[in-house]
Length: 150
Image 1 (spheres, rainbow, N blue to C red):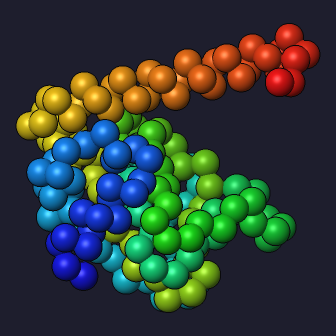
Image 2 (image 1 turned 90 degrees about the horizontal axis):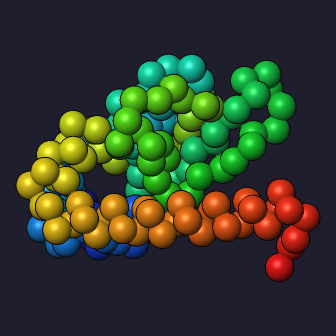
């Protein structure tokens, strides 16, 4: 896939909208594409996270229960899995399994941090966007805990 196509795809993902084109180019260039067959496991629940993943084609099942029950979530193209893993080390809360032949883009935390260091204006815009999202979440949570649903 062409680098410019990857940049366009990245720009459509919420987390990356605040990043300038050159920052997206660095992510697209430095990310690792993975081809998966149906049934391949991308990661397992409980593993330490070191990267986020974007589904480029195909689909993945995120299985939180790990007991064969219906999957909690099916992830389609242009979806980011493991957003928090780009910022801090966390544990995977689900097992990710390819439902069909799929192509995944792996973005390491190291690469993402490099982008934020090299593009401080993008980092500031991302910080502002994440702050706004968190404030919105807190307002919604307050409404729920106070019994209001507007």
